[in-house]
Length: 593
Image (tube, rainbow, N blue to C red):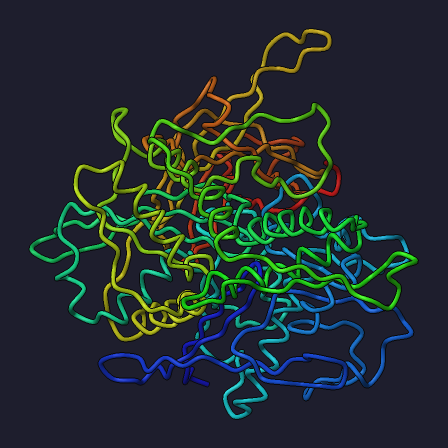
């Protein structure tokens, strides 16, 4: 059955949004947003514009018809708005930030580890499983609204952070396919999707806002992450073209950190009243301060906002404790704490308070987003000169606040001799990524401007050198580039290098690295050494490969062949130099870390 719709899904850290348009829309797509039915309270289903990316895992005595959805009864978990509310009251049973866990290579993301640090009686789930459940929910919501055009038959574009490496993308793909997305769905980087949403709004007028030589900074600060991309404007044969030239690292700093900062401010006010909050109340306060922050930072927001936590002590059982947060105090805290004035040479502090670090997500120790932007522009400059954007496109719920956009613009202007201009954009930053994904999918089918860029990173395989062994000392490791920065989808390359012995009939694993800054490396280039921040080690490529019937040896000499599929997935092939046999190495997440 031919697809009737193109569907864009923004699987966000804090909210999941779905938009769609008919493929046969002429001239421009008529993009709409899907209302998603979900539980807002036990037994109460409402349709909302997004699905909060929260899962509540209730104790067995709470299960039953109270959690039924229009398309399924007997639910043993809750996703969406009710789960978000429960995260304040039952944090130990609430799954949050599953998307960030997908990018955390130091844990087994197939293992039931969420909620992190939950007590033993909680039946945990894996980050992959949590992502699958969110997607299953939106698929069911679509099929409920459009029963004659099921989602699996449509053209689907699913967005991921530009900073996601190949293994995080593969895990996202695995969750999506198991949830029921069509096999030909496409992955699209979120900052690019935000630009496509702007292109959709501007139509042909976009060429009047951008000029050859412009560098567009896409600054996307969402609930849990900050995602940075730099897009260049070039003249190709008299036609303007857009090309993604740099992406940043996966930065775990965003709106959640701001909520926590506001909660810390509130806690000091509670302390002044003689109220000391326990751990349970502190987590509840964190979630309660999210609403306070959004209210106080809104245009025409109130001067104060009440914050309430439920009583826990013997004197407070059944009661509540209240304080009022002042707007100006919250604005000063967030503007100066997260968007401080700084120079381009001011980079994030990496200093730790202790040699012991609690296991969990690798949150940024420095919350100053402006310093992270300075680091990004410095890393992706040319010949030691930082990249300086002439335009900026804001995205993410954090930038709904005028105060925060204005401060970021002021800092960018301080770095640039000429004023940095913002692109005209919609005030609905929460839905821009999903809408941009729809425009991208529609343009693929109907023709339209496309952002070129290829892979956002260079990829390397670690090869152990041969030589005499030294007791207690590992052999030196070399990194062989197998995918260059910018390798286009639908292309492949033979990697020129010395032959490598590939073991057959038993588990084979390669150490694997990536870099967003070494853009000059080409396939076959070999690094004997590198700076700590140049290459980041990611998951292993692992497989148990069948023997070659034409050879008696248990290993064969091979060379590498790399391929980036049309769907944006990376494949690495080992090609025998003696026979016509070839083996594909699959990304997998090892259980032993």
